[in-house]
Amino acid sequence: MTTFGDEMRRLMAEQGVSLRGLAKRVHYDVKRVHYDVGYLSKVANGRKPPSVELATALDAALGADGALAALAVAKERLPGTPLDPDAEERLRKAVQQPRRVDTAVIDALADTLAAQRRLEDAIGSVPLVEPITTHLAVIEDLVLDARGPIRAKVLDVAAQWAQFCGWLHASTGTRSTARTWYDRAAEWAAEADNADMVATAWSMKGHLAWMTGRVGPMIGLSQAAQRPARRVSPGVRALAAQQEARGHALAGDGDATERKLDEAQALAARAAEHPEDEPAWIYFYSPDFLTMQRGLAYRYLGRHAQAVELLTTGLAGLPEELRRAEWAAWYLYQLAVAHEQAGEPEQACAVAAEAADIARQTRAIRLRTQLQRLHARLAATWPTLPAVTDLGERLA
Image 1: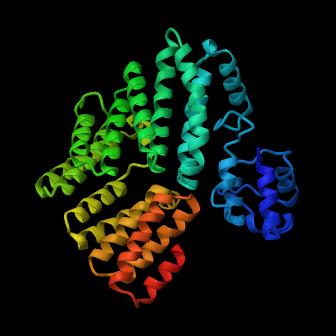
Image 2: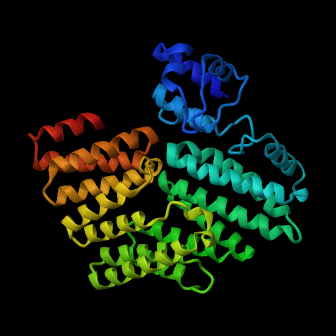
């Protein structure tokens, strides 16, 4: 099994970078922790565990495209477990004696999941599919053995893991597996009486229908996610409402699109008033995210200039760590398409180039394929434009 230190030393040797040179490249991570030669030596030789922040910084310094950050998920530990030794030991004991699961184990699983969601924003879906799926095999055993009052809490956190696993599989193109995990999330959440996760699972199945071009199920599942209005948070309902709006836009129904977008905006405003009542898994949701959704819907309706304006505004409002996420790069691609449709090839190429860089860093194969198709269209219409040539070289 390749360890973090093995891969770090291999990359250093491949690029001819010394520990001293690497220390000059890294300096500090996002938490302003300083890494000197001695510290990096201990990490490279397995005497210190790498933090996710350090791994991400080393990825950038060594051009590892997320490989080191993925290994920092720590395969020597339970896949995806936090680096905190006490939490790690609790999870080990839970695997060995599932019926002794307590709230500390559940808290550790919840904290770990939150970290994995943020890690996916940094490195993309591909590196996380295997460790998250493997970890879920452990969690399934915990679900089977959970008894008494603790069972609902185990099911609750398990449903959140299943939903995230479904998202990862959907993002990487294994859609039948994604559907299976969304179903599992809905089942576990229903037993745990978590209406927010049940609605989220239905909404994500609607997202899966959208990915496969099935507009009818996309609208219907989005509507199903909004129905238990008294028990589902405004933020979760807003996500489903804007998704329904996109479905109406794809169907060419402008009035229904506007109505649902306005409804989503009102729900989002309510959610912003009490963010503490919103589930942790919609941490990315914001007015800027909703602005992007309106821009995407307008692109589907053929309102290209408005789509460009709204997608540009929404993307500009995202925090930097989210703007570099794989899913945000997909909206960059949509902005590039909107520029193309508005007859603005140079702007389309500039935005597509930014998306291409993120696709490379996160190993987003589906996004890269979409960008290549966009380039083919641009090359067919503007074959001699230098920006089109440059984009083709970047995607080569």
